[in-house]
Amino acid sequence: MYGMRRWVVAGLVGVLAAGACAPGAHDDDVNEPDEAGESTPPLSANAPAPAPAPAMDAAAVQARIDARRDSIRAAFGRVNKLKWREVWGLRRDKNAEQIARAQSLGVRVSGEAQIAQLAKQGRLVALEDSTEYWVLRKMTHSVPYMTPDGHAMLREVGRRFHARLDSLGLPRFRMKVTSALRTDETQAELRKINPNASQTVSSHEYGTTLDVSHERFAAPAAPREASPAEWALEVVMMDTVVKYYGKELQAELGRVITEMREEGALMVMMEDAQPVYHMTVARRFRGAR
Image 1 (cartoon, rainbow, N blue to C red):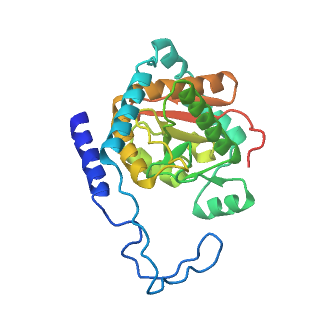
Image 2 (image 1 turned 30 degrees about the vertical axis):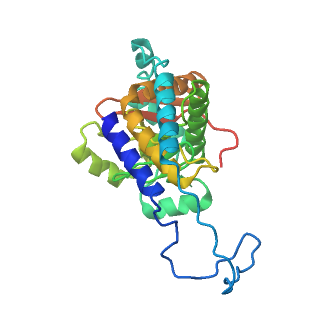
C-alpha cells in the first residue's frame, strides 16, 4: 500500500515539475487588481517577458514527504492504544442519563422552520463544514446545528486534542463529525435503518449532542504558508498514514474526552456498532456564542 501511494505521490510531483499550467493559465486574459488595489497594466510590446515560475524539484519534494511520513510513523509508535479501563470509563454515561441532561440544557426542535427561528435568535449555532478542529461528514438524518454550549464543547475538545497531538509531535489531524441535531421526524426515519437509534426520544433532538467518529480522522487544515501544490501531495501521504493509526488517534481523542468528562463538561458513550464517541453537553460553557 505504501509503495502504491508513493508511486501516486511521485506521479503528482512529476506532473507538477513537468510544467503543468499554473493556476489561471487558461483563464481569459484580464487585468486583476494587485495587492495595492491598482489594476496591473498590460505589457508593452518592448517589455521583457516575465520569468517563468521555477519548477518544483521533484526529488526534493519527494524526500521531504518521505521524511515527514517517517517522522509521523515514529511518533505514532510512541502512542498507547486505549486500555480496557479507559474504554470502560468512556462507556459509563448511559442513554437515559444523556437524555435527561440534554433536556435540561438544550431546546427541543420539531422541524426546519423552528431551526431557522432558533438560529436567528442565537439559540442554535451552525457547525462549520470545515475548521481547524473538525470536518463534517455528509449528514442524512441530522442537520449541522447545536446549541452555543454544544458548539463551544466541540471547539474545546478540538483544542485539547490538538494540544495532545502537538505534545506527541503529530500533525493536527481533525475530527470527523458524523451526526448532530435531529428532529423527531428524522429520528423516526433513522430508527427504520439503524437498530441502535433511540426508540423513544434522543438527546440529539435538543442540540446538545453530537457524534464524532473514533475510527476515521481527516488530514490537518492547510497551513497559511503552505505551497498549495506541495501541500496537496502531503495530504495524500497523511490520508494514507492515518488509515493505519486510527486506534492511536482514537486513544488520544478518548483521553481528551475522559478529561473533560471528569471535569463535568460533557457526557460520553463510546459506541461500537456505530463507531463514534456520542457526546452530550453536561454544563454551560462560559463565553459560548
